Image (tube, rainbow, N blue to C red):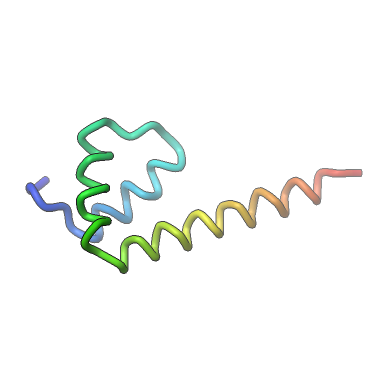
Length: 64
């Protein structure tokens, strides 16, 4: 793990952050990277959108 995280690392942390609490260092590294990288911000937005859509769909399917 270098000082400046790669986009690949940010994508991994974005995904992991949806399933677990990231450490303070992980969150700080992500925030700093996201300030500069529009591609990773878009990745995070798209990932969150997909997750919401899947949850919404599974909620509708489980209703009688």
